[in-house]
Amino acid sequence: GAVVSQHPSRVICKSGTSVKIECRSLDFQATTMFWYRQFPKKSLMLMATSNEGSKATYEQGVEKDKFLINHASLTLSTLTVTSAHPEDSSFYICSASWTTTSTDTQYFGPGTRLTVL
Amino acid sequence: AQKVTQAQTEISVVEKEDVTLDCVYETRDTTYYLFWYKQPPSGELVFLIRRNSFDEQNEISGRYSWNFQKSTSSFNFTITASQVVDSAVYFCALSTISSNTGKLIFGQGTTLQVKP
Image (cartoon, rainbow over all chains, first blue to last red):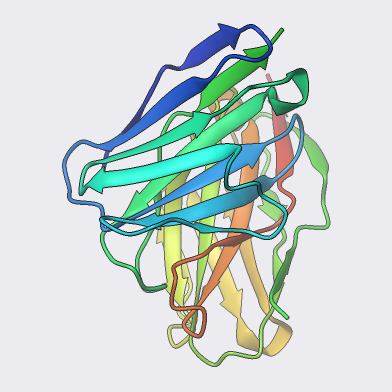
C-alpha cells in the first residue's frame, strides 16, 4: 500500500514559538494532501485540504494565519503552527491521495503529537 | 447533509469471539464511497477497505468481513475470532462525489478492546 510519513513524530515546544510538521508521500505522487487534528478519544477533524501548487482550502473555524499549509511538491506538504499556545496541543495527522476527487483512497501518516508548554 | 454514525463507543470482547462494528451513513448523493480505518494505539490510521455505492457485494478478507446494505444505509464490519492485536479504534468514513474534493467524513469511532 501507499506509504505516508510524518516528521517529527513528537514535538514539545514553548508557548509562542512556531512548529513545522512535514508530511511526505514516499512511494506515490500525492496531488492532494489533507491535514487533520485529533483530540484524545475523539474523531478526526479536517483542518484543510491542499493541492500541489495552489493555496490550501481551510475548513470553517480553522485560522489560516495560525495554521500555515504549504504543498510545494507532489510528495511534500507542511503544516506550520505559528505562535503556538497550549490549546494547540493535539495529535496532527496528514493524509495523501493521488487525485483531487472523492474516488481516491486517503492514506494516512503516523501522526505528530504536539505539546505546547 | 452528510453524516456517519458509529453508535458503539466502546466494545469489549474476549479473544476468539466474533464482533461486529456498526456504521450508518447519511447522504443524498447516489455516488459515494465508504471506508473503514483502524487506529491502533500507535496512532497511525490503517486503511482497511473502500467500497463504492454501486457495489453491494459483501467482502471478506481473512478474519475481516464487511456487510454493505444500501437499504439500511449501513456498512458494518465484522471481525471473526478476534485477537488481542485487533484492539484499536475503528473509524468508518464517507466520501461523496458531489464534494469532488476527496473530503472524508468520519464517524466518531468505536474503541474495540480484545481481552486475552
